Image (cartoon, rainbow, N blue to C red; front, top):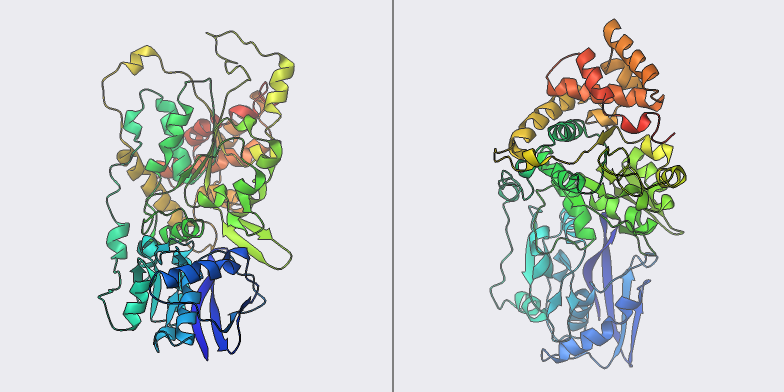
Length: 511
């Protein structure tokens, strides 16, 4: 007897439907074909124990199972439930004439209970596209899959629940989630709020500009100045995610298995990898490619604390994803692409001792040590960072000040208004949404300067010895400052403020 049951495989952030064909014949044997990996090959032991512990059995016949398309590599333990249901129907232990209308996925424990799987959201999206009636999966993943409207999503705790459903027993109901209600949950009480930060008004202004234009930013200052504290609060002032952004971000975290019983993500991600991270962990990859930290930070913030401590080759692999806003991982037989549109926030001490340029502290680093320390950050990487700002320690008077600082919600209103201006400006352009993404051609179009502003910029570049790469960056940041002021054109005061945010281009830093 031949039976077909349907599962799904995830490649990148997209799913592909897998047809599991189970054939029973005379003889004894268990043959699994269709490029399964070791985790799938081991499923026969889990399935045999789960069936026995639920009053069923693995039939003593010749069982041949094909996972089609047979030339596509299948991986992971999520096909256990698919295979088990196919074996039960093919051996006439249960009847399930409607099973071909459903996608079935789940890892079996030996007692028949189900363990969570990865990629439930992309699988549900694909099932809906291909016209399947429903999707059975472990109850731990049901919230993320139930985001997809128009598909009956059943969260099940064990194998017996699925058997009972097709036998017409039990009361298994599809999970229904109001996606919009889930998405628009209040965001007005962020965990990390700018109202907690004492002093640092100029740095807060700088973070507001970075958020408004989507600019990458680097914070330079001695230990304890508040660099990490400020960086952690940046997501709280970014504009709320759109529904499309939320779905994109949730898909990536679903594929990585990081959702932990959460439905639609409505908070922008904040990722802060340790400086010992490898190339593959940062950009993604592996023998079975998985998204890396830069993709996990998609539509959010990637924070690299103590930037010069990262291995130079790790930082260099970020250059292309920063420019293209996606990372492509190629293998001999397939290629996957993960989105990676994130804001880079980096922090660093100005010297190995941490106290260079601090008049109150001795500088214990030699010029050679300083040069070696700063040379870890390459020019091309620095070229992709629009804003450089020095962070100085907060004096005691400001730390002890009881006055409440401006909250993240108030700052976010101004940031959102500036982003709306940019959205309107770039609405006819496909891959450009905010000022940081402008090309040189667009900079010339939208950052036209009057004579006074040109003269100011020329003087600043000569006197401060700013590099040529600083020119475009200053204009982009000035355009964002103008948007925060709702000004139609860039004027000299916007240019003069933007010039302040190029510390590392001046003589004495990376020269």
